Length: 67
Image 1 (cartoon, rainbow, N blue to C red):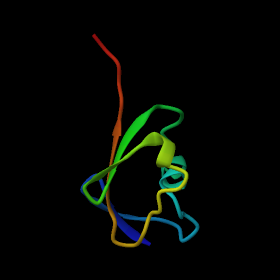
Image 2 (cartoon, rainbow, N blue to C red):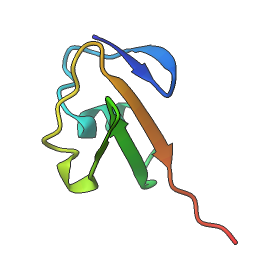
Image 3 (cartoon, helix red, strand yellow):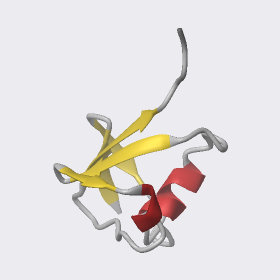
């Protein structure tokens, strides 16, 4: 399936059905992220149930602490 991820075309395996599975495939480890799907914020507690569909526009932002 094809999505737009952070402004770039990205191909996902057909096995990827949820935001949680997509994030696992990005290999960003356990670092917390913010996710927006088609212009709507996705809460972390919804990652396991929020679907990813062909043509979705998804933004994934890593949260970084600093000072």
